[in-house]
Length: 281
Image (cartoon, rainbow, N blue to C red; front, side, top):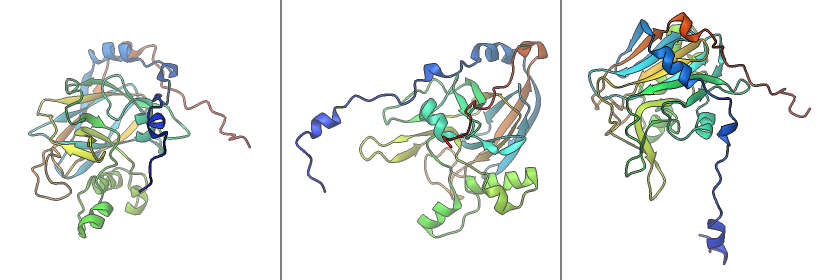
């Protein structure tokens, strides 16, 4: 609607700059974790039913894996500090520090004022996918989670198995909080196994059928005591309809693994941000 100025092309030609110089981040311990994972043994598991959610706990220094079982299925992951629900996964900052999609070596960062790694991705059987011709990638931190409010806005119906509701019910079951209070702790997710991007013409958020298959998994190292919640999305592999009961859906399995004690003898959990929190006052 606005006529382009005479120097429009010059303005568009400005050089893009990556916002954060991640070389200044505290170094991750991926090499140590890769060695430790070879000693890890399973100590527990949680199976997340289709179109539902479950919570799980992971002690600091343990690994957890999210497995595809029975059929292609994506999941929505929330993480909290097990001792403080106010410190939770910060998808926006994770996106800024890493990328729109994450994989091995990337860290999931916590909300302000903590701003520290909550978990580090230590293995990803879908890392071969890369970027497809549509601009799609796997494990995004750009989508928010399907929710009943948006679904009602667009379709005019109440649907109770959107990921937001699944995560809410899971947190209620794990903590005993009232639903209205638990819901406020549900936050933007890591879309596990989901294939997403932005359309090349209109730049709209899209999803397409996930390449995940039974046997695939993504593995994380817990940098602190974690309470996690995972929803087996009602979109199934997210290749067709969404937020309804028409798409085939499958369970997801969360496996908790404990490494040998000696493997992490020199490891310590990351500290909270050192910022003074004075804000210039």
